[in-house]
Length: 353
Ligand code: AOF
Ligand code: ZN
Image (cartoon, rainbow, N blue to C red; front, side, top):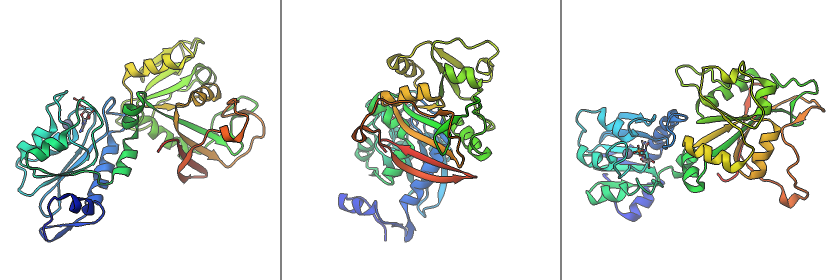
């Protein structure tokens, strides 16, 4: 059975496998592959989205795939890899193809020229200057299906999508703490609260981040480098917020990565600066002072908590007084996932996902 467009049918197709030339093609499985591919662009694409694209032939076999890494758009990279697009090929892409002349010509035009007659995408383009690719393709007789695996891909691209919606980057606060919420012992030692495997995960998260934010307090107390141990990646940019001066010998002043010093305690100044950097996402590795300030300001979209199965009883808490006196005013998050990382429990919490 060969299936083609039609609104009702399309609605049906989003939930069920389909057949191409008698073969079963499950678009959600292919979209999951494109989604996984897109994640390889994390930390490399700002101010733009992460995007993964696959081309399958009429039998449903993947014949080309690529992802956006800050250069050409994913669809263009996947198309350019094949000399001649075979008849009956389908493009699977996590984002609706763009429809504008920006750094590159519109992907919608390239798709039409390539002879691809079917495009399946997950999330509509929310960028006002680039949107409209699906309509352009349909007008050129290309069969277009949108919304496949939309929730999953929306989550993967939450940094870019939220930036468009909220006009500010997405903030992730990473905290390694004891069971009683301590990030530093009474003697001032804050190193190695969490396991080696947890620290390796944080290193990876750094490599996927657009900028890492700390306060001068953490800079002076811990002298962190904030580098990633991942190989073949650019070290993430570092941003230190606060008025105190950082000594020239500080690791943050080494040549491994670009570091910005923002001599301010003001949220608007921070957001203006981040807008100039055009980042989609900020990894906050701050201590309680800056962390509490950002939490009170309402910008912490997500927390990654590494909970060590240990107790200190005394020492510094990860968060200070939020000025909340009643339960109904407490700050609520949703648990997105839990995972054992060696001996630690990792909890990802998000506000609006
Ligand atoms: C990307 N990569 O794979 C796709 C994008 O700045 P420009 O000219 O490259 O255009 C960026 C816009 O293009 C972006 O905001 C999004 O709307 C659309 N699609 N962008 O960087 C891609 N497919
Ligand atoms: Zn494009």
